[in-house]
Image: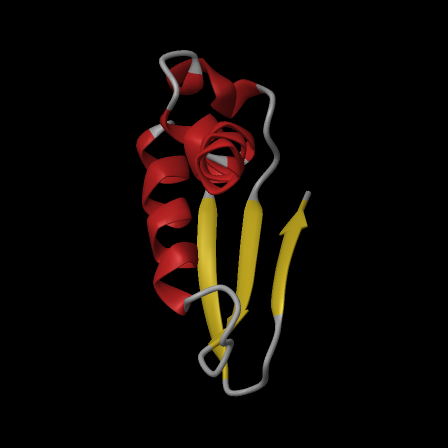
Length: 79
């Protein structure tokens, strides 16, 4: 049960959830351009997660770009 609650909390608090929410189409006027830097060797957060977030933000009208690095890094740079 605890794992289910953690998954629900993660899903609700994730940036991907926010980008896919019904309010997201108007978010582009409030969100600056976003650069997602993500290491391809990251074992905690798969690189594909940044691609999903990038696609969701672009669908909401936000100017975004993904940059892959060989290092173990995950950074979101806004503005």
